[in-house]
Structure formats: C-alpha cells, structure tokens
Image (cartoon, rainbow, N blue to C red):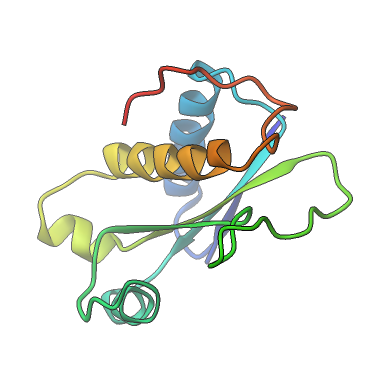
Length: 137
C-alpha cells in the first residue's frame, strides 16, 4: 500500500488525484510499497521561510524534501508503531514552478528520489521494502 497525504487540500480533486498518481506510479515502478509520503503545497513566502530555516538560502525554491527517518545528527527518529514506513515530506511551491516554467511531475519524482536516497542510507530502515540498487537521480 502506498499512502499519499496532501495538505492543504484546497486544490481541486483532479489536481490532488494527479499528484497522487505521479507519486504512486513512480514508487510502484521502483518496487517500493508499504510507504507513506506527505505532500504539502505552499506559497512562495512559505517556501522562502522553509528554505531559509533549513538550508540557509533566503529565497524560494520549487521543491524541498524532509525525511522522517533522519535527524540533523544523522540518526533515525523513533519509528511509530504502524505498518507503513514514512518516507518523508515533499514541499512544493507551485508559484515557483510556474515562474521557472517547470512542471510538477519531474519535481515530484526528484523529491521522491531524494527521500529514497536518505532512507537507503539509514541501515536496515527500508529492509521491509524492496528498492532497486541502481536508482538513478
């Protein structure tokens, strides 16, 4: 099972469904299952604040990823008692995507690859799911 949590949900159902389809399709192609991904859409100011706080870059960007498996010191957070593994959060700024004439799909895939790489670095974390060894980023 692949679970995609979307916030805010004020986007159209068709837009949310398309984002879910992109995420689910990519993870299935990578043979990754039993995972949860959070997807959050923010405005340019919100993205700028996150980028400044977590990367020290005082400008908005198109996509940020936050693993739920890695702390600043590189140690994993305690796992909650549930069956799905939380890959992490994807934060997307649609205004920046449009400003840079990009599209949503490649940025979602880029963010997912980042989350997978972080999770693979954590020893045994993804042993419950199969991931390809030659995942290209």
